Each structure stands twice: as structure tokens, then as C-alpha cells.
Length: 330
Image 1 (tube, rainbow, N blue to C red):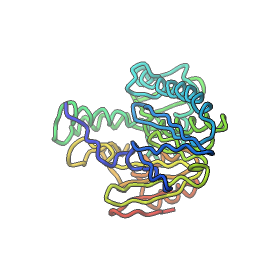
Image 2 (image 1 turned 90 degrees about the horizontal axis):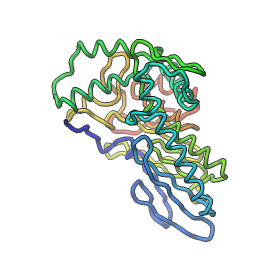
Image 3 (image 1 turned 30 degrees about the vertical axis):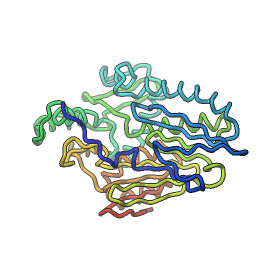
Image 4 (image 1 turned 45 degrees about the vertical axis):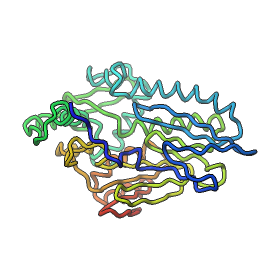
């Protein structure tokens, strides 16, 4: 079995948290702990849907912070049992196997409904039924270790199962038609991020950074200024944005590639079944992490004018990297 090629500009490394203070900078894997009369920093680290995750809290109540982490762990376990494609007992795995769920959880229903909204808004560029394409390319390049062009006849057969309209959701059931299988990897992490932020806020913990691949900057850094987020474009280009009560998600075709030429990667066009991308990276800033997550995923398949119109409608900001240069198109 060959390995997936995880490029240096995968989703997690495209965003860096920068603490521009006398204490120095903060980025993934390197954290500056501070403890003064006003603020304490506590930190949770773990995994969400098999990916590294962390929460940074700036407050003056360390005991309360420690208590809240038990609530966070409980919710993350719930999310894993709902959305994780690598958990053989998760709701999503069982739905893909049985093609129907007659008693789906409110969490699964909510995310599937939100997915269909984004599919409609993006004219099908966001499509949760692309899971068979992932399985197809993964088997060809990784399991079988081939470097040839994948079987076109098999691809045409798989394409017939891909259409977001094959997913039918009601309050008491979810049905997958035409042998469809779904993935929620382009929206679930953002949705989980939003819910963690809500848990923190309900406990009056407001100055936090929740980084689950999609980042939500709640309140302020040390309760003094906005959070500084560095967007990394992957070609020695970067841009710092300031966020308060906003989420940002970044997507790139180079996040995960199946073979060394990078022609086949994880951004699939649902209409062609091929790996495609209009931009080198896209970062979306909005009020909700699930929205930033799903739009960033689909934006790579949109043209610039469509993306601009969509973001203006959603009151979101879009930063693209094209020809190695950052552009704010909203």
C-alpha cells in the first residue's frame, strides 16, 4: 500500500495563530503560556474526527476552564459517533451501508440539511455524495499503488451515483437514493467548531480560539485585541487577518494528493468526477465555522465572479491565492 501525499500546505498548516505581543508568537505546536493578574491561559488538545485539535482559553477562572473540558470531551465523543467515517459504528458509516436511517440523530439531520443548502447555493459544487470518488482514487493510487490513469469506465459508473439530490432528509429519516454514499468532511468539522464555541459561551467563556481545522476566534486575544490569523498560501506568500467572533476555513487542492504529480487530489468536481481547482487556495471568513468550511471546500470549483457574488450574499469574505498572489475578492 502506498501513502497519501500530505503536502506542506494542508488545511491545518494554512492557518497560523499569531500572538503579536511581548510574549512572542503563537502557532500550532508552539504555545506561549502566560499567567498575570488578569488572565490565565488554559489549553485543551486532542483529536476531532481523527485530526489534531486544540482550544485556547484566555480567562481569569482556571477552575471553571477545567470543568468545561469534560463537556467538550462529551460533545466530541458524540460527534465522533455521528460523523466519523473511520468509526465503523458511527451513524454516518451505518447510513452509507444501509442507505437509510429511520431514526437519525438531530446532529446528523442538521448537518445533512445544511449540506443541501450549500449544494443549492453553489450549484452543486458542494456535494456530499462524492465519497465514492474518494474510495475510487484511494483504491487505485494508494491500495493498488498504480500510477496510471484510473479506469474511465469505472469512473463513469461511479459518476452516476453522485448527485446531492440523491440525499433525502426529513425530521425522522434520511434516505440515500441511487446507491449514493456521503461524506461530511467538508462541513462537519466546522459544525463541531461552532458547537464547541456555543458550549464555551454558555459558560461565559468568551475569549477563546477553537482550532479544529476550521478556526473560530471568539472574543479577543488576552481580552485586548483581535486574534491575528496568518493565512499561508503555500508559495512563500502569506497574509495576516484580524478576527473577532469570526470563523475562517482554508482549502487547497494540495492539502491531500494521491500521487506525486498532484494531478489527482481530494477536490472532486461532482459533474466530471475529476480532481479540479480554480485557485491555489481559498480562505473564507464568516460568522459560522460550518459556513466557512463548506464554502471554502466548494469555492475551489467556482469561478471568481460566482464566488464573489455568493460571499456577498452570505456576508462572508473570500481570500484566494491565484498565481502565487493573495486577493481579497469581496
